[in-house]
Length: 200
Ligand SMILES: Cc1cc2nc3c(=O)[nH]c(=O)nc-3n(C[C@H](O)[C@H](O)[C@H](O)COP(=O)(O)O)c2cc1C
Image 1: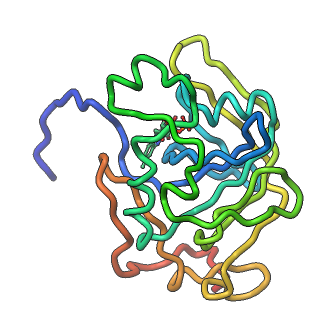
Image 2: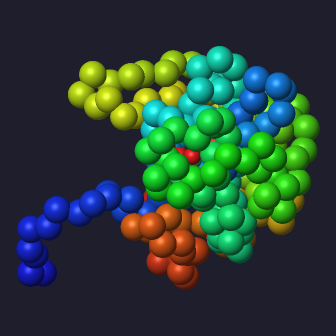
């Protein structure tokens, strides 16, 4: 038995993969929003987006995106995006947090835009997994005035050949997601085991 104490953590980012969410701007260019609040349910991926995020505004107007998953080696490129927003003007509360407007986030983080197959926003070429998705619902929960829950359906998946095991399986030995762990970046450690339903 461990010994616990009660705390009031400022954040509850308990270690989820980083996503580089690409969405289409009004002028047809592509914005990149780094996020970590996401999870998959079958072919659906649920995203948590804060108000004031330009990515959310884009999705309300143009409901398509690419869920690009960087690997751990890309953490500095993700961090180069961290103080940037596609919102112009920058909302006051974001300016106070040190955010600045950036029109071309690909260039700012040295990333390569690649055309998508079925959605309009570009993919991030360096990300080993790129999920093209459409928005099914955006919920604005009445219990929170700061966040939206965006439910997407993944329609098309691109995987780097280096992490592919078969047409239906990603090789978990080769795929090393970037984990956001209480505002610090981590990769994965060594494998511990696997679930009884694993096919690989
Ligand atoms: C690693 C990381 C994880 C983040 N996770 C989220 C998140 O899950 N949801 C969110 O709304 N913002 C998250 N943010 C903050 C957004 O990146 C920030 O709101 C940014 O302004 C988004 O860009 P945009 O305004 O151009 O959409 C995260 C930032 C970083 C660096």
